[in-house]
Length: 245
Image (cartoon, rainbow, N blue to C red; front, top):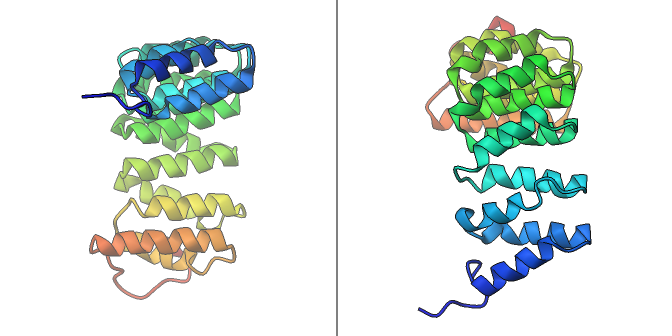
């Protein structure tokens, strides 16, 4: 079969992308990484690794993210190396996020260490989100600790991640955030409740559907729709406060 010039696996096109990755202009290297989007992982990853230590932080960030999307056996060890050794905290945070996209349980211990030990909140935030993406039940206690901390951004990450885990034990721990002053926390709660099927979740979502912030209302209505599609309905009257449900 004749290979089309537009075929992402066309050797001529791959050569063109590889040449662009060697360009002295960072904009060219960014374009080349974007062009790898439609290239099969086995062919894309060796090219991505060519710029994984690029001098330009934006190029490096994009390359690290790409390793979470283009999954081969080479991705996990490289991302773990970056998470634990890279001096730039933004790149370490990118690596944590990419490990979440991989959904490989072998990343669990490294992500837990990053959450507990990294001094930068952004890395800890990304590690918490990634633990939710792994959907590993072992993350439950770690995420509860994030939930109890003083940082609202980590609370947001923990609420979202606990929703991803789908552990019903999380429900009573996260419902107390229904009246948080931060609308982003309330929005994350509304989204998380859509993954925790319970009449109590429906009751809390009905409460959040009357929130003064439109984004919270939209998230609550979407979660209500998803729960009702699963046959979950509220029992009893709607409480004034969801923690009473």
